[in-house]
Length: 233
Length: 290
Image (cartoon, rainbow over the protein chains, first blue to last red):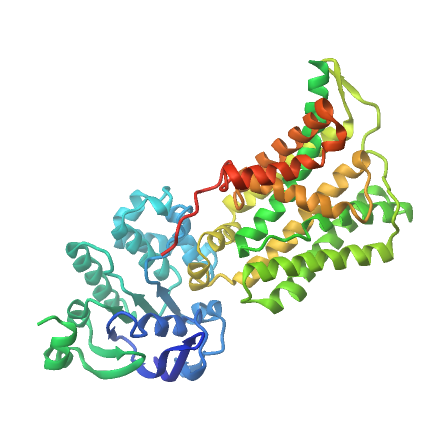
């Protein structure tokens, strides 16, 4: 479904990703793990088109998309839940969700709203409130709901557990695992490697802009080097 | 008392124009962090195009419509040929580009029109209406009413339409707006177009009272900017309030001090706001985004 090859991207002179290749197959949850500054967020942003790339190709459903603007990639079925949630603070919860369906038009949005509210009932309760007033966990739900409103086939999730209480982390990751059952493919970036690999099929480890390990999630969980470096055991 | 009321009427009239200019600033600023100093030229175009089309025999309403079309086209052209090619440049660079654009527009207008002051007839007569001992021109009511309608229409667009919400979303968080599929370039073009229309309408409404010439834009842009600063840059309610307050201050200063100092009021306001209240009357305190 998604194939990235030789991707490079830089902030000024500093190269954040240095020739990354990865593949996400339809129906998979793929975890991308690595330390702070490894280039995980840059990679997701490059796939969405909001981060310029200097080399490489991005194939989505067999077609090259690396030159398309971000809105065209959304229209093709790629949605990102950005790091730090990035909700539209002054707008209401419901407006945030409606804007998630911006490319599809308001007439298709009602059905999407029902589904998101079924997934996260607390958002339905707070639909008329400004998004800035939500708690961190609720904002994360809103960010995920907003991304789902575009009816994506590929969901890019950047650090959904960041800054959340452990109980909420489990709840959010449970939702992510449940999304796959609805036919969604997920590329999940996480610093919380153990939690991410627990729900993932496969994983990639990124270190200073390069993929250093890849494989089945279970195999990565057992890899002694990774256990030491990322799992804290 | 009668005298005070007279100053209030004239202050509110000119304040409504500042408010509209400030609204134009706000729209573009929210979509891009750019202060568009060509904003005053839209007001100039509104007045001048109407004057010359009317003088050429076009009925006034049609001449006004033509002026709006010209100003919108100018706004879109500024975006397309001056701002868009410099995409990615920092805000200061873009602001300087808008100053260049305003000089260009003024120069072209000087070639196409002339350097004289002009007016066209007021919409519904020139006889002042007596109100509580003071008098108000019918055209002042047109200015105030027109400004109120524009503000209300803009509010409805921003609050009730998906496209308007997309503009607000872009203002709130540009990265997230791009990620949900909003074409932020298009939003900025829209902001320039709408700002052009609002500026032109302000120019059309006020020209029978204040007269117009190709050079009115510069001072209007500065005063509109002062109004936007006073209200809190980026806040549409603040822009309207700032415009009205600035207009009142000017009229009171002209009435009770000396009309020589009228134009100084706007600059005193800018300095005072920067020293005392950098976030403006309605602005948020600057928040560090993480």
